[in-house]
Image (cartoon, rainbow, N blue to C red; front, side):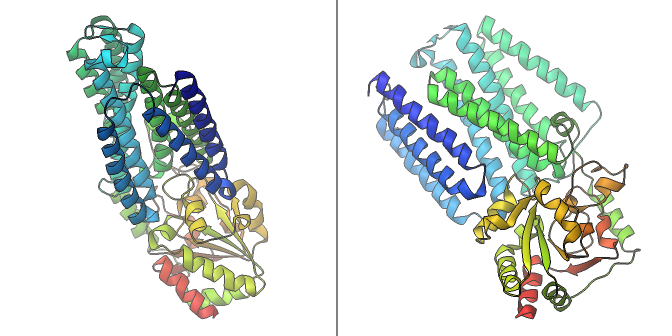
Length: 465
């Protein structure tokens, strides 16, 4: 394939990726966006394979077959609740790929057209150093995010005295090493740069609390894009540069939106994520046991729901864990046949990653026109007969508005407490992912429905029938 034809094909692929991002911005157009993304990637792969620089088709095809088989297996087996950690794991692979390409370019620069060993172009060394550093940070940071989301590590922030000074010192050292690499091209400097960048990934994510993980996943997505962009310059691949920039910038914008949804700055998230340790959470649970709580059964909830005229459903991570979305849809369908108006309220940081609840509801074929974001639904709670909260905790906590001492104070919440009745499905009185006790549990208009979200919802469906 000629260079001119390759350029046109890469342009078509880039347009497909842009259309994919546009489509993924809305649940209604997300499937079309996915199709654009797949078409764009197919064009990119075929164009790259047809370029004259390809030397070993058997190895490339073997890699595609093995990687495709693994990806297909994971996609078919993965539970929807595990999507956040899957995304984090995939981000780590992008970072690792950037590191591997940088290593290959450093030791075989002539194969990349950037010079020879000991005399690599200065521009290429800068691009290589930046792509390597960002890729290494993405790799180890994503591993920690995966471990926290998978509960292999505690969701509580791991902090220690002087951590910010240490991170700043290592950051300055990384910049100095990139400059030193430009001047000396020393292997010692190169590998020290890799080691410090890997260390920064650990140190950046370990102190971030579990409640900030949706922002972290989005932030790491941005990092992976910029890592790919940097390596695109090293490879001289215009499509990789464009695609990396698209992923990096869109991830950064999404991180900003998530932070806005939590009333926090990205620097506040990185430098001091909120969350508590198990001890404080246990103390909160002990305190909760001393306060009166109104609890009910599935039959009680069914009676209240059947006699309501308007019900707003607020899904959260508890719904995802229990895989209750299909039972929830069945319950909603029965209520709609009874003339009850049903709406779904989604908080920007509900679940463990951006759009987590939207994906789960779409899986259950919940109509898109019934699903509303926080800013579009909040004013409706005051006129709703019932707010049905299924597994959401921190995003409904009135302490975010009423308690200046609360770690989540200032975070916009779904104002479910304004509904006439709040039905709250939860396994226990334990605090949410942020480790903050929910004042909503103790309100006069709240009825707690203790148990597994799916089983409780199925009980309500049975009672309604």
